[in-house]
Length: 247
Ligand code: PGA
Image 1: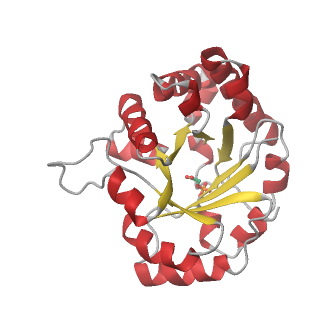
Image 2 (image 1 turned 90 degrees about the vertical axis):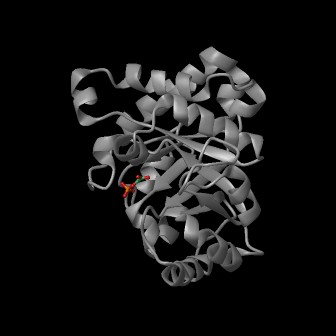
Image 3 (image 1 turned 30 degrees about the vertical axis):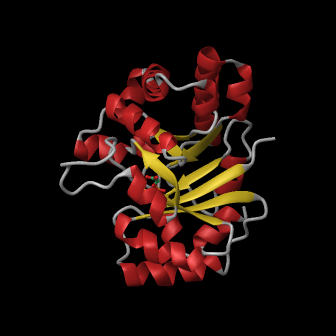
């Protein structure tokens, strides 16, 4: 049985002081008995939020990382820095980073490797645009993202990766994929992992759905056979996140 994993993606929201208040409120409500719970927070909020959740089972995630070890990369943050700050999970290749900051599958692959090298767990995102869905090339697009993103990883490393399927047309739009649509793609992702690494790895790897997950749709989405939890944006900034975790 794969354990569910539910991660909040705070995106570019919450100053350090606001982040502490939100983390304290959620810490006192979320139940970590049945699922791994992660707060992926802005880089500057990592240290104060890690302090708030110290001694609980809530893990801290980062929203991005650079793929080089260190050096002249003004404005960037390294995996080593994140690790030392208490980060356990790192999002790689969120569609907003791909769209607004030019992240490619090759960069995502380098990030995934760097995150693993430092003993953290990548949350590797994939997802199609509305145009790709309408053209009927969703699965082709996702398969390429998965194959390029995992390229060169051993099976031992691949099974640690969390894959987040996030249809771009469902992110922040209030338009959720139906549980059938989400299941279809998550099953195809697992199949792709099976083709590369075999059934043992495919059975173990955890696949999240993301895109307008809320307290009302979480239970149905998370009950699908190939959906092992969610990556939650807007609803992770509110009390509602507790209901999603305790779906
Ligand atoms: P959303 O964002 O829940 O606000 O749609 C999800 C995400 O981008 O991870």
